[in-house]
Image (tube, rainbow, N blue to C red; front, top):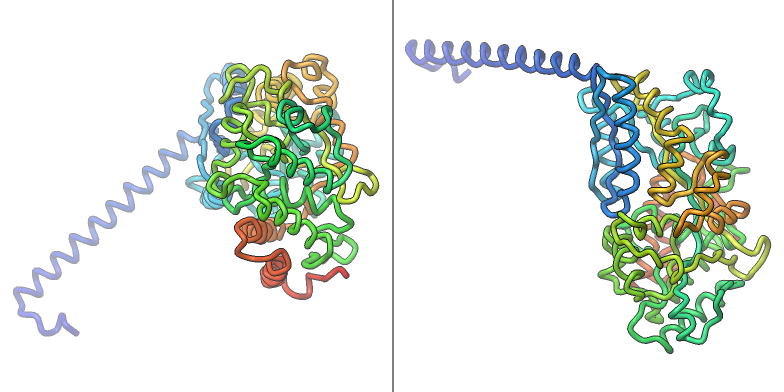
Length: 466
């Protein structure tokens, strides 16, 4: 209506301006489309690999990827491999990766996939099943069947090729234990043994952190799996009931696990909150506190010595002589006596990747016996391959705890392979942090968890275990 009241001269100017804007818009769109076409053309000769850059914890990972890149480019002279490292906290990494893979313009050709995300990413259509490739790949028989389960979604299809697996236990400092009058070797039989050792260290060895466990939302899955689930799966309870297909939102085991965390922090047995509630908590304990012998017991994974190797983030040749790995006991020492949690990482192909066949060729090379052996020697993870697991060079590598860590597999547990797990994990992290900071009691934190999980999965998909 405003246009009707303009003078003839102003109307003419307005028409000219509108015409120019439309022409510029058309040119802009043409230029944008040409740019996308050029990018699409060049992308045929490039495969992009997105991975989470853990900082000091990724030194071996990068060496492995670079070695595979070199041979792959020699085998494919017309192809270039480009890495897309994502430096972010766990939650931010998954959010950024999800945005990347959903967009045809930004989707990489390969992503490193934390195996607990396989089901949710498969259900969302973010990654492709790899069965058509695996059917023609004889090397698949050399992968551990239990590890294969971690990359198989509920639809029975395989969505990633694993390049690592792991177990978790208790690292303890032999010098601090001897100073505290505690036994070396140390083999705790129940949770009380662990708590009593931490209390003894506090009393006898001032100036060190008696017990370390990831306890904040910032450390994401390291808090859910490495701390809380290591406790919960040592009780009589679990997170998920596979018979009823329901999440267990309240149980005695859940409450007892939070109570253990409460005992650590209410008795000043844990680290400063400023250390443990940051996303850099893993670096702090592995590259600072442990090499300086400032922590007595650490609930962590078999990969820790990877940062201490020559060329690692914090070289410390004698690290595995000072810190020994022992199994985490069940709550009361009940069968099987010990517990662990296992996860790992895999290489997956996004559904919107440009070069899926080339991506598969890279994955085959990267997870071959030759390069998986290189990876585990450099990074310190356990191998998913049967042949590499028996390699003397791997078993006897300096500073390696492969034998001890691999022995935990017989009593290990895996996270529920259900697509809602990532959201449930977030609720676990909130509950653990609330107890660690003292903002909620263990019972209040369990109630908060129950409400949040019920909201996320629906009340028809939860149950309470008496």
